[in-house]
Length: 281
Image 1 (cartoon, rainbow, N blue to C red):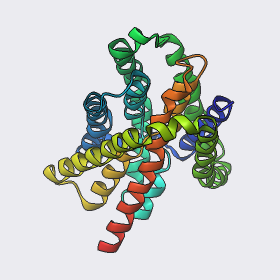
Image 2: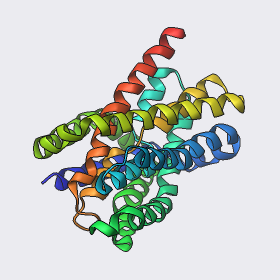
Image 3: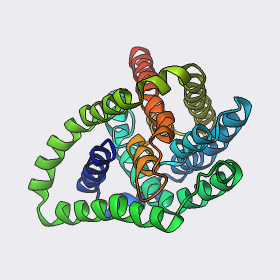
């Protein structure tokens, strides 16, 4: 049941991202190379490595091991743009980072998840049909973004009005998804919330701490540093849930539990972060 909720949600979120994009946004890679490099390194390299280390350290069962690595491999969440705005960050940079990470992870997710599945999953019967994963990502991630960009250029006023509605729906839709998963798997979540909750919280805190430190080392601006921290901490949980529970990929809803817990904790941690930086300002 949950998969037929998460797939439309993911498609809507990516379509909304496309509505806000312009091709010129991708040129920001060259205009702001250091903030881009730090954020992408934190999101695409540090997060998966930290997730692997934590999964080993806490001796997670294979299904949760793969699920933790999966959420760490996903691109930035669309809500990061809202959080960047609330924190007084660089919203344009946030939009660009979300878009670029969404494109790059079309290639990195299959590679990393194939390796993680071979490492701990195949011995317990968990296998990854990598071709199906690539097709699903292209259909649910890339295609909606391209359609959104097309509408942005063809009907800019309609794109702005649609974005106003969809951007407000993103968080409530995610809450609906989390609620459905909790109802279906509440006992498993309660039995594992201690260890998994600690794992995902440490994953978020260590990743945003490292990205903040890297930002300071390369002397990025204050606004850019806030955005980098938020982008690294906020992952596209809907995509992780879609990959884990999709009947065409892993078909394992328990694998989505780390993403569910991550989604809850990233919002708590980043709301606290936004409150702290706003008070400092």
